Amino acid sequence: MHPSVGLLYVLSEWAVRLVMLVYVPQRRSPAAARTWLLFIFLLPWPGLFLYAVIGRIKLPPWRLARQRKVSGMIREWQGAHPVRVDAAGAHGGIPALVHALGDFRALPGNMIELLPDYDASIARLARDIDDARESVHLLYYIFADDDRGGQVLAALLRARARGVECRVLIDAAGSRQFALAALLKRLQVAGIPAHEALPAGLFRRGAARFDLRNHRKVAVIDTRVGFTGSQNLVNPGFVPGYPNEELVARVTGPVVLQLQAVFLQDWYFETGELPANPEAIEMPAATGSSMAQLLPSGPGYERENAQELLVHLFHRAQRRIVITTPYFVPDDPFLQALRTAVRRGVEVRLVVANPVDKWVMGLAQRSYFDELLSAGVRIHLYRPHFLHAKHVSIDDDLAIVGSVNMDIRSFALNAEVALLVYDPAVVTAMRAVQERYFAGAIELTREAWSRRPLWLRVAQNTARLADSLL
Image 1: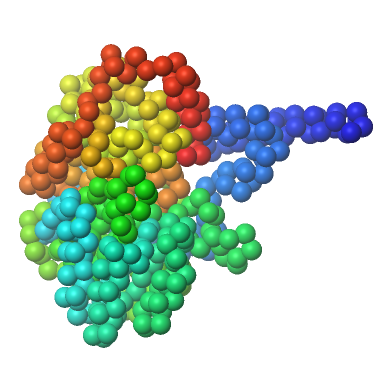
Image 2: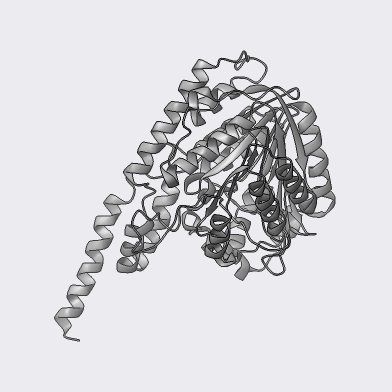
C-alpha cells in the first residue's frame, strides 16, 4: 500500500470520529451515546456502518402515521364510552399517568388469574380456544409447531373448522428458527389469515429493522378472555439447558378489550386492515372486582413509556418492590430510583435467572450487582429453571405482568405490553409466586460477590459498555 493511501485512510477514520462525536449525542441518552462513540472510536468505519443501520431508533413514517391514527381512535372510542374511575384517588394518579403514556384508561370489573405453571397455562389457552364461538386472535413473539405450541395450533384449527374467525401474528425474527414459513402456510391453507410481524430483510420492500421486534404475547378469545405475560407458544426447553419458567395472566372483564385493541393495532400495522365499525365495539361485561389497565410500549411511542412508568413507581413505593426479570440492564434513572427507594426504607428485591442464556447479557447484567448490593437491594439468583417471567409488585396494591424485560432493549426497541392490576388480592397471589422464587434461589451477599476473580470483574464491566446494543 502506498504511504499516501494509508495516511488518507487514517485521516478518514479521524474524520468519522470527529463528525460522529458531534452527531451521535444528539437526542440520545448519555449511556447510549457513550456506547456508540466507544464503538466508533475503536472501529470507525464498521461503527459508522452499523450506526447507519441500527443507530437511530426510527420507524418508517407510514408506521408512525398508523400509530397516531390508532392512538386517536382509541382515545376517541374511550371518550364516547366513559367509565367512572377515581384515577387520582387511592392510586396516586398512576392510572392517569398510564393513560397519558399509552392511551388506555383504567377499567374496573376485571378478574385476573395468575398462571405460573408452564403446561397448565398452555392447556388453559387451548381449552379457551376450544370454547371460542366468534373470534380468536393470537400475537406471539415465538409460535412453534411443537409439543406445546402444537396444542394451541390444533385448538386454533378446530376453532376455524367450527367457523370461528381466527387471526395470527408472529414476530418474523423470533420464530424464524421454528419453520415460520411452513406454519404460516399451514394456517393460511386452513383459512386462517396469518402474517409476520415486523418482517425484516435487506431487499424486502417495507421491511423492518432486524433489531426492532414485536416481543408481545397476547391472546384474545371472543373479546371475552385474554392472556398476556412472558410465555411463548413453544416447548419450555427450546434453548437446550435453559428450560423456561413463566408467568401468564388470564384476564376476563372490560380490560380484555384493551388486549384486543393491541392485537388489532398490530394487525393494522402489518396488513392495513381496521375493524369495519370500531365505534360499534361494545365494552365486555364486568366479571370481577379488579381494576386493571394496559400499557403498550415500543418505538412507535414518543418516549420510553414503560421505563418512565417504572421509575415513577419506584420513587412512589412506600414498603416493598419486587422485580422479576431474566434480563436486567437498567439505565441511570432506573438505578437511581431503586437506590433512593432503599434509602427511604423500602424493601427492594431483584429476582433474576441463574445462569442467563445469553452470555454477554449475563456479564453485563452482573456488572450492576456491586452498586445494587451496596445500596441495599437484595438479589436472588433463581436456579431451578431459566426464569423468563417478567413481573413487578409495588407495595400491597399494584401488580404488573407482561412481556417487558428490565433492559434498554425492551424499553426502547421492542414492542411490548404490560398489564397493571390495582388489586391487593392479585398482589397477594403474585407474592406467593415470588416467595417460591426466593425459596428456589441463592441470595447473593455483598461479601460473596466481592470475592469473584479480577478477570470476571473486567469481563462484566467490559460487557456493560455495550448496554445499549444488547
